[in-house]
Length: 361
Ligand SMILES: NC(=O)c1ccc[n+]([C@@H]2O[C@H](COP(=O)([O-])OP(=O)(O)OC[C@H]3O[C@@H](n4cnc5c(N)ncnc54)[C@H](O)[C@@H]3O)[C@@H](O)[C@H]2O)c1
Ligand SMILES: [Zn+2]
Image 1 (cartoon, helix red, strand yellow):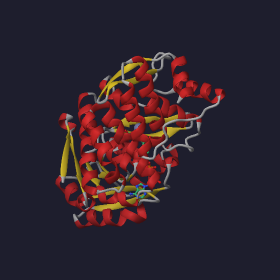
Image 2 (cartoon, protein in one colour):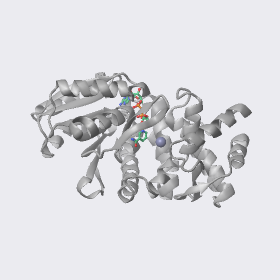
Image 3 (tube, protein in one colour):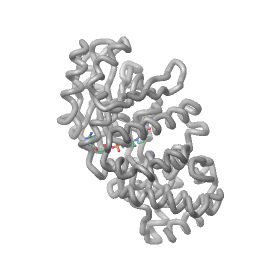
Image 4 (tube, protein in one colour):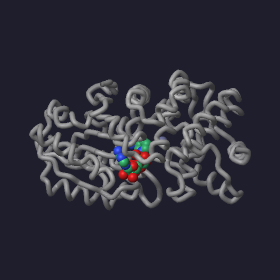
């Protein structure tokens, strides 16, 4: 088992990474001194696979969990499901020392986390991420929330979990496309923070795609450690935390103009990261050989590296990028790479250059 600590003082917590970690859920919650009544929030794909084990583990440790199942998919990250979730929590009569377990991918983590942030003005949250993306990204760092019609993640809070349990065995049932999508975030950590991780991904990609649990344990632990370090220094994104958005400016724009259906998040940010690498070559001295390594690793991971857009679509993409909530003062700012493992944030990029990179991609 590997343990990564998120250094946030009183709000600090551990991320445990191990095959079979789900079985420890009850015992680990018992150590946190929480009330008996609790809730497990999960989705309709994960419930038949993992809910029984989670409920049994909690039951064996003396807890009384209610099970709340939301429909699988981004649609569950809505005010409607948030409202229904609160009603279900109230019906189970949770109390101040009760807790919520988020058992699922990023959708469940964000919804359950926002329920935990707000029910009875804040309950303890335990994240049990079951997608690769959730294990390396969304379950760590405390951003929780739901979507509005006007855009993704527009309502939410910062609410750090008390514990994160990453069980590598649960990734076995993850659909291939979802797994590869999660890899896009893994590769991102190599580019933004750790050239050795990037080289390791190049070397071990076959074992990773085969979901070798030992190789995955080391990779997930390293990604969590990087996120922990970044969040530890800048919890609420006033500076450094922005580096986690590498590839996301264009990626979010692509997701928005394609109606959040065509691309999975990881696919959109794979395209976005390759485009950002090309912008970096123009603006921050990222050398062509490293741009090529970036594009090649995404391609080998089975992720898209370019997009064909009509002139009209390019215009909509730029407009969508300007609307992203990370934009301040109307200017689009990018995270750009200087070399593998080192990026700079807050870089202004002329829209014409963005267009040029997307046209030649
Ligand atoms: N809070 C953050 O910091 C943060 C960071 C990144 C992304 N996010 C959010 O995360 C969400 C995306 O998360 P995601 O990619 O995990 O998507 P997801 O939660 O929709 O999960 C993807 C699919 O895999 C299924 N699934 C989950 N675990 C499974 C398993 N073990 N076996 C089989 N199927 C399984 C789910 O039911 C779903 O159909 C987005 O809403 C995004 O905004 C949040
Ligand atoms: Zn992302």
